[in-house]
Length: 585
Image 1: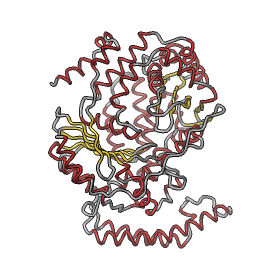
Image 2: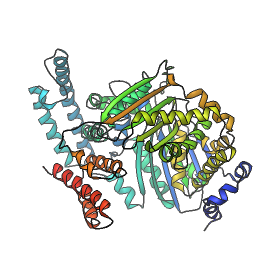
Image 3: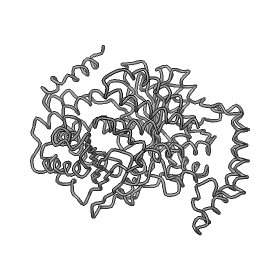
Image 4: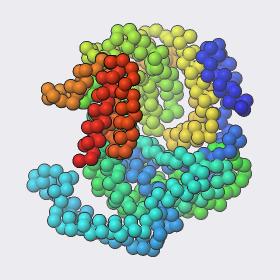
């Protein structure tokens, strides 16, 4: 066990944390030893050399998210997260020349199909078509072209090597390969054995230098289905999307990262090529390596592979939109297949703003089972079953969010008023020193936990670099520790105002007398919100195999516990059986 590991274990002791002063914590703080290099093509390279484990966690962040899109191509940043795994001339196909021929033929057909789509949209505006997105609204010519296109897809499938990118990494000992898209960034990452650094450099530079966007339209359909499952088929997904649009108003943060349905289905490969050329150029990318390597050797190898990629011709457009001041409170009232709850947003500040740190501390004072919201609204007045709050600083703007779920017999309005009461207390009196110190100690413990292994360090560097500055990983801790009780009170008074907030209220949707939610009547009050969440997860699952595995596990535990638990498990089984039957129709 290393000295650092022993220190982490020691810090996890609550008694030890409670005994530390702010000065003591600052003295123990560890810096992440990041070194920065700029390659000749403008690409940034960040290296964190550490020899605690024989692995390297490698990743890169493209400084582009859904906020960089425009109406008409919303969702394209997330689509690229998928497309970047489709391979290169040497990965993903048995016959690259044939592959290119098929892609060109597909594009020719798609141009014609887009012209037919234009006709349907024109008919929709004239009132001749009820829904331009429905298959039955398509023209006869479109259906002919679609049949031809499907033929090309089948022809291409014969020469594709599915998931070869993943298999090459896995066979080399790679693990945890994944990617994500947010409003501000798109990140890619994996962990490989220390002796596979050159493999990683070749693989990642190849997919930036010579990407092949094969199966583009098939993958576009996958993204469309992902949106349907995550947004349209979840109890609160479509409402959350509307609430975001209401809150952010004219700012790009207001449109969904997954894109709107009409935009996703209209994105062309030409759109994708132009997007890639601008936002995936080397000067808009940061490469990050964390782990067991020699920095001079890693820099030399990185130059050899990544400097092959020419600097982009087009510079990234400047980000112009500002979050406009909100003149009045906004409200959304919705009925949903979910427990009654309230969701409140306040406009706050972006990443690295001086007030983001006291707001972050304030969020921690409110949250968790030892926070003020839980103590006042769950344990105290008992109007809520769950509460949570926190500051979320994005690159160009910030939001403070507090949510609360109403207990049976209480209303979202009662929870909302209780939240305001907690905030008023923070405005009236400064937080006691012991309470503030406890929160700071928790942040300090987190500072050490982030050093536990290569992978969590990589994820943190990706996140802060994607938001604008990797230095935040070393500077945030001291800024959190410097927050005073007066700072907390000041930001509470400054940002928690009626005119800067948006309030979403959700009440349970009334169903027919024999509706599915009537089953909940047989559950205890504390079991109902849990079952509602489980039911939502079951409905969003599309794998029959996974559902059957869960069903088997539930049935094995049916006899456990008291009568109350058996009723719960019986309903769990019923929901699983119904979903499996629905998918197997």
